Image (cartoon, rainbow, N blue to C red):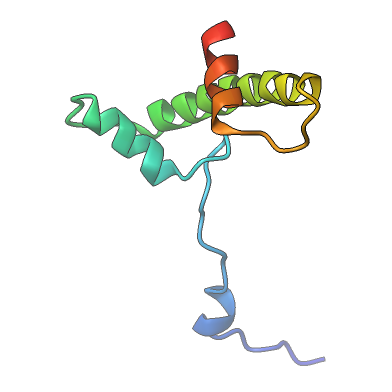
Length: 88
């Protein structure tokens, strides 16, 4: 059997990395750190902050859904998120 010849196009079909370990775009998380005053940012720092933001965001969202359900609504509103944030 003859081996199939692999071209550059076939090996370069990787999907672009949109999100880091958490769930948000790594570039956006890095921008948050840089806007806070950092000159250099390690990939580990981006990953750590991404995980923390995802974890806390999930807690806030869950509490906002509870607030929404207790209000007899199905739609989560901005005020629900703000109230959940102030309670957590």
